[in-house]
Image 1: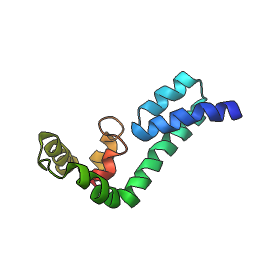
Image 2: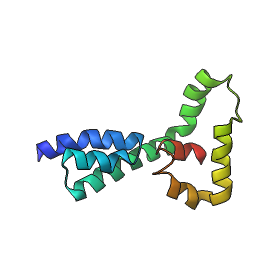
Image 3: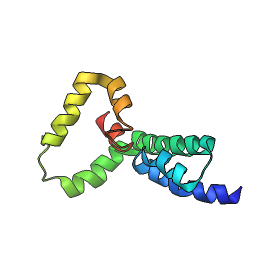
Image 4: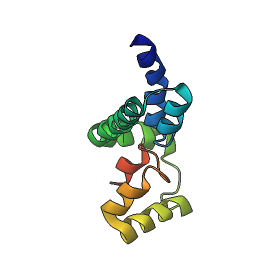
Length: 109
């Protein structure tokens, strides 16, 4: 039990950064299918909840402090806006695991 839990921690942390790392890491770590699914979803949802509740604080305190001189309308930002306008919330939710990170999705909302 403890061995599988110790294997699940890196998978959980990597799923917090990029969703696709969860299933790949779970497979490589030798976790069961159910544990891989649980840890991957838990990692992604942890980040989504944190950024949903504390995203505004992070944006004003951290991002604006270090990146206040950057242009707001970069080509990358325009791609995000295009995805948002073209596909809406359902499209962003569907594209998050593949294109965006769990961190990027709450920033778009």
